[in-house]
Length: 165
Image (tube, rainbow, N blue to C red; front, side, top):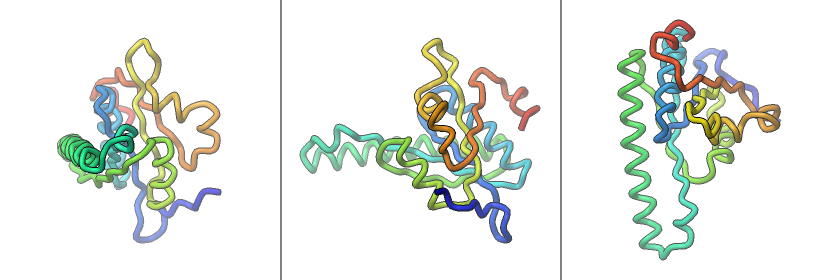
């Protein structure tokens, strides 16, 4: 059972959620979500995920170092996309860093922040398919996902996205 979204209640606003990673199409998702958030007076949440399966198999000091380095890298990437959102839409995005599996973290974050109302993903532009997250959340999983998912084609230009946002 999913919790009711609060985004339209007084004192709340609809937030768009984007998972930030190092793929080229990530910029397309951030661009579109930032423009939509600005045009609808909403917010933008950028999520950085630390997937550190190997850290659990390391000595404590090594695991801590791996975690610190991954956190620093994720924070730098998030900061770059916060600047990008400000540049393209004049909004300041919130950032969140979580450790674990992306498909497990998403429902928990959405349950915590009931203003998050739309997940924005960008489809990959490579022959391998739309990308692992689009594939993981699409199909059978999307029927039980707690919020709508918007999938932005990764090959769209800024002008194309502006026309749709």
